[in-house]
Image (cartoon, rainbow, N blue to C red; front, side, top):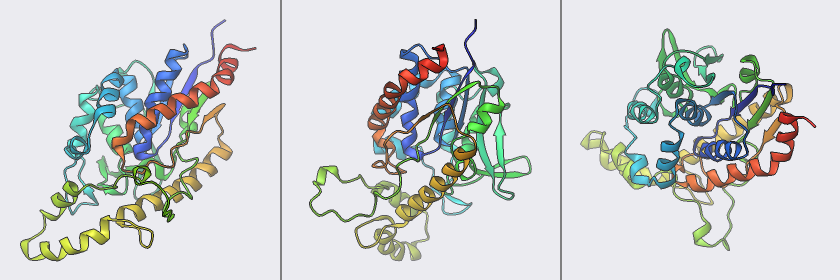
Length: 311
């Protein structure tokens, strides 16, 4: 008797998406290998590296990356629908095997993006893997949209943050889904004077990134913009900064969309890592996220084994 086809669904969540690496590692160590992989946003990035054979390299990079290395991937621009064009990110994806076609990968894979005009979800099941992932990770307000034929595409988390429906359509019989949006609300912008300084979140945008943005402005505007920058990018108990407002607005939206979609399309196993303390742009905290991914799988292993092996 053959076992059922296992589908792994990796949800959106920006920097929290490093958690997916820990999930995949823990599943493999338990002898459970997904047959189909679907992802949205960072779930598409990690899932794409996995099916392309580049996950080991991505894990090594993520666990050791500093803010300087992360910022080196950012090609800042102040026009075009986002502050980051994303051209350097495409090269980054290719470093981890994503220069190939989706159909050339070891497993069936799909990435989800959103049509900026119609709001419809777009499934990438064939074609260039790197282009599919680049479209899926186009977080509004940060990355510029991606042109695909006649469409402009943005982050798939706007329409399908945890794409269980896609995985089911690809033929998965047992679906393990990772929802990174389970505890993202209600923990930020709270004034806690007694909180130790070491426990405070790291800045959402380092000074080098801000300086590169300001450097693109004409000299006449640069001085005024520099004075405004602290209000835009800093945050505090009284008034959150620009990226904090953007990030938490997206969190609210994705929380509501995720709950609605999963109510009608539940997976067989739902993994809910506790990652609300990691900010959207804190990509330098991969170690914490990966460890939480492993923990979620370890806690759910008895249920997963019953579903996969019966009994």
